Structure formats: C-alpha cells, structure tokens
Length: 559
Image (tube, rainbow, N blue to C red; front, side, top):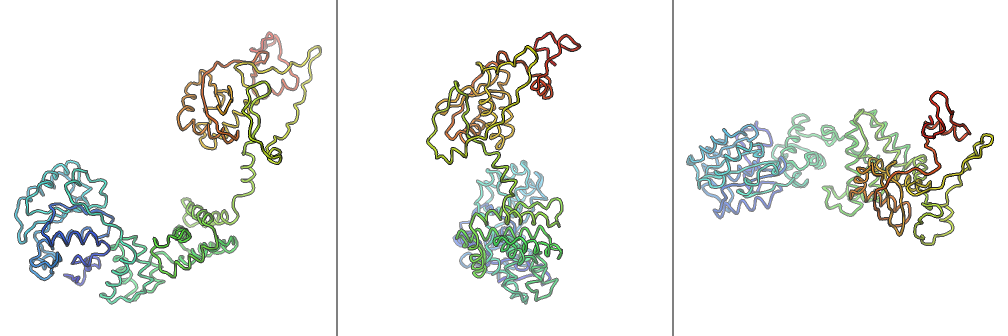
C-alpha cells in the first residue's frame, strides 16, 4: 500500500508505487525484476529507458528497496522492516541518486567511482541510481565504463534515460536493458480512480479519460493535472471544468464540423467555424481536435478500432458517422485539415474555411481546365522521311478523335521585295532538330518539369532527339553540355525522363544519351536580334546594307 511521509507532498510523490504490484502498465518488467529479487540473481547493472512518467525512477527505487528488504515475500518488499521504513521515509543511506543532467562531467563520475569501494551502511547492497544518463560526456562514459563492467559485489548500478539511442553501445552491453512503454489509457484511468478514492475527489469517469488522454501515456503528467484541477476547482471538478482547463471546450463542435464536411454542407460548416472563432476558442487547438477525430474516424472505418483508447459508445458513434463517406473522402479531409497553416495568424479562421471549402467543393474549375491543358496530346514525333515510332495498338475512333491535335492556323506569307521570291523553307539536315522533334523534346521537358524543375532545365536547348525506334529514345547532347548529359544519365534523372516519355508516347520508353556537334541548317540564317527583329523579318523587312552598323549581305552581321 502506498504511504507518504508527509500529507503535504505533491500527488505524484505521495502516490508513488511502493511495491511491484502497484507499478502501472509495465507488467513484463515488474515480473522479471521481482523474480530476480526472489531468486537472488540480481544483475550488477540495469538500464531503464522509455518516455517520461512511465515509472523508470520508481522502479529503480523499488529495486533498491527490495534487494535490501529484510523479509521479502516472492520478491516484494515488506514495507514494514527497518530497511523498508528508511526508504519510505527518504532517509536510506544505501541509495545514492544522481542527476546526470547536472553532474555530467568526468570529475563527478570519478568521485562516484571512488565511492564505489565503500561498503553499504545498513543493507546488503549499495545502489547507485543515475537519472538521464544520456547526458554524460564521452569522458565521463569512459570513466564509468570499467567500473560498470566489474563493480564490487555489493554495488548495483541503475541507469535511467529517455533517450537510449544517445547512450554508447559499450555502456548498454554491460547492462540488463528494460524498455518502459507509454501507459495505456485504461491503466492511467484506473490509477487516477484509485488516487481520487484515497484523496476524496469526486470526478466523472469521462473527465478522468480526458485527463489521461491529455497526458499521452505519462502517468506522472496525468497525476499532476489531477492535482491542479483539485486545487483550482475543489474536490468535485465537473467534466466541463476539466475540458475548459485542458483547452478542450471545442471538442463537441470539432466533431460536428467533421459531420458537416462529410455531409458536404458548406454553409453549416462556415457558420460553425465563425461561431468557434467568435467564442475566442484557440483555432489551432480546434484544428488539432478535428484532425485527431478524423484520424480516429479513419481507423474505425478501416476496422481497426481496437487500437484506439475509446469507449464503446464513442466507437459506435464513429462507426455510424464513417458510413457516410468513403475511406478516400476521410483521408482527403484528414490531409486537408492537417495542412491548415496558422503561422501567419493563430486566431484566424481562414485556414479552416479554406480547408472546408476544398473538401466540400473539390478542386476548382480553373485548376481542372489547367490540368487538362497540361495533359499532353500524343502526336507523331517525326515528320515524313524521318525515323518513326513503332506502330501503336489499335484504338477506338472516339479516342483517335480526342487525341487528334487541333489544326494550327497557317502563317501569313511575308510579302517579298520586287524581283525577290520568298526563300523556300529549309529542309532539316543531319545535326539539326526538326520542328516535330522540337515539339516532342519540349513536351518531354514540360512533363519532367512537373516532377523536377531543375532536371527539366538540363533539357532546355542542350540536346536534340536523334531517333526513336523500337521504344528506344536517343537524345544527342551538344558537346559543350556534357555536364547536363551526366545529370540526365543519373539513375534518378533517367527514370524521370523515361517515365515522362512513356506517358507521352503511350509505350515503354528506354532512354539513351549520346554526344553530337551542334550544326545549323544550310540556307537558314541566324536568327539574331530578339523577337522584334524576327517579327519584322516575317513581315518582309530586310537588313540594311552598308549603313552604320549595317552589313554587306552576310547574315552573320545582321543586327
């Protein structure tokens, strides 16, 4: 039975477990340690690790008391002998507690090592309980290592930590390790009920569940909250007072908003959000409660409600609500409200309103149109006379009509000067990129840009499509762009390009890269001077010969 040395102690110290049977939620550990004490096979070093408030320090003190008890029963301390009384009253001389967070240096560990040789004052063992052992310095670990490996027979080390990954493996290997787990909701509620009964606190079971849930598996945190509520509201705090103290006053309306989301009722949802804002409720807390409820709803929808610490009535209510929507709808709502951003204004209702509208209305019409425009149209990648892609499987007439590109308006013929006929269109020659090839490469680059804009930049003006035959796409990179070729040939770059090309062409594409010289088609003048000069040429303008900054007819000198 738990006792206390002073009625004015805080609850978590007053009701600290005084026997292994009172330790909550750690049955495998308590059973193992108690059997070790009963059989006399006590290890020389233990490592207790786990989240805060789960009983590590309490277990260490219980072990120290049990190994020095004068009349143990099946490994349990009797709590009546002189040795147990000294532990209960906090005056045990053979228990040395040290906080490694404030005594983390090599000098403190050397002092501890020097005292290890001293015999116990009263009991059979001298126990050193080192809390937050992960805070020790590397030098301190080295000083502790040899003593920890072969301590005197009357010494027991108990190391406790919340971050075992920071403890060196050489230390862990010399200890018996026990991992404490977060306590289940039912275990925390049961312990709170016991404390309320002993302290004369009248409180509803639902209020205790709210306290336990807010503690996230830490019994010490839950006991501290219970004591604060009792000190503030008296011995009979109501459920509403508990929720108000924990900031959970919007809990019911969060569930109501979830129902409006699943019912696609935008008007009712916006009115509820406005009411929550006008009542001064913390909008971020409201969002967290809504996200938690949506998560629980998704778990219930998946049939895994056993993993939730919820009453049967709540599970049944969630099962009924989840039947209104599919798992995809619930998941989409969970993501939408989980990503609501309150960084600019924590009390603004706009993030929740946007998330609600997105869930109810879905993607906006302009976004859908833009997505349709970006969707590439399958076109023949090469003009007549070039290498062609392998024949595609037969498609329906409706699909062929949908994939047929819209006719392009013909370009206006440029008026020619007297005695001068318009130059014929230059035919593509080896080393140049034909217009259809340009179109294919451009569409591949745009498709890659949706995945990795930096990778798409490596395809911009650095290469050309050399061939496409039997599902093999060959990109020829100009020699001055060797680095760009290397970037595309990386496994990640190759995968992105191949997937983009496969989507565009409707077949599995394999990418190959090669190098080539950049050449200009014969008869095609250099297009210099920017878009205004090019537009002037299309309208019939001619370069000025012999004037200031003019040329002698050489296209390279055109401005």
